[in-house]
Length: 330
Ligand code: CUA
Image (tube, rainbow, N blue to C red; front, side, top):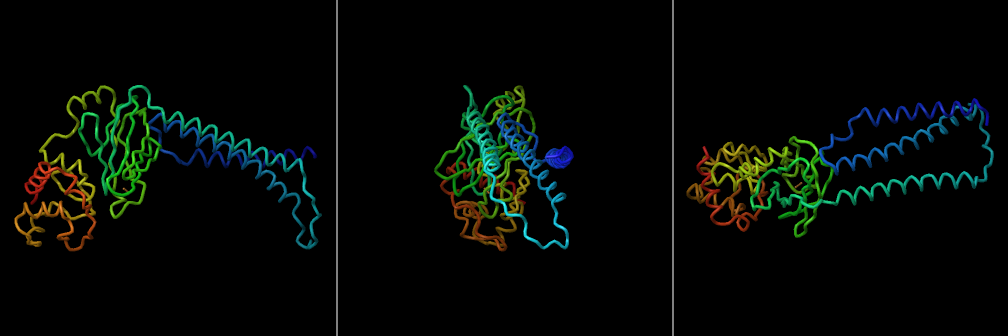
């Protein structure tokens, strides 16, 4: 092979490598990681991307050089020379990808094993999905509509569902985990920076899937201790806590609870709607709508309200919720 050819091959390869590197680095493909596990997963991405750019450069160099050098003349309609394979070449182009793919699988396996380790004292949080809200139960038995974590302390999330399959995802924490009824799937997250990040459902789960969101607050050690000592954010009327725990705000607008869901009827207009429905006193109408939501459907809304609240919400809490809604309604 002539020296000129090698220089041309290397030049085309360098240009291709530069383009590949620019596309990888200049486009923000990944969110900024907020957890140790996410850092490891991002490492796997970049490791794989580096290999992909190297392969792309070599293939583009050979392809580009062949197109430039061995192009047939416009009036050349002859068959090309017959070629009977090249054993050495075939062994090389089988062995190199095999080595690369094995390297990727080893790195992935190590990351997967590391990401499963929760350390000696993880915070245990039960994550429950239901159409169309998340709830988070802490070891002290309290339940919240959003997740609160402590920077630097591993948390083990025990994820399940009350109805259909959902999927838990915080982009900055990088891991997705299915929420399956009757099954407990776990992931470990170890936050590395403070901030508020979205919790997103990534499994099509029904009418309200697109708005099935919550958030995670990652607090510093001091702020987290303060949050724990104050018993979390569940202050206010007892009915508000019931409203938040059952994820009502995922689907309904209700100004007193700062809820702005759009799947179900607007609870700010409860009084007008109750008058239109004409199904007895406001208390009875609200209770019936929670326990037996199909009994009366507000015109323009489908029969999408889960039918589980009658069993899910204890009687005393149901009374608190009804009272809270009736008092807050305009
Ligand atoms: Cu829950 Cu999608």
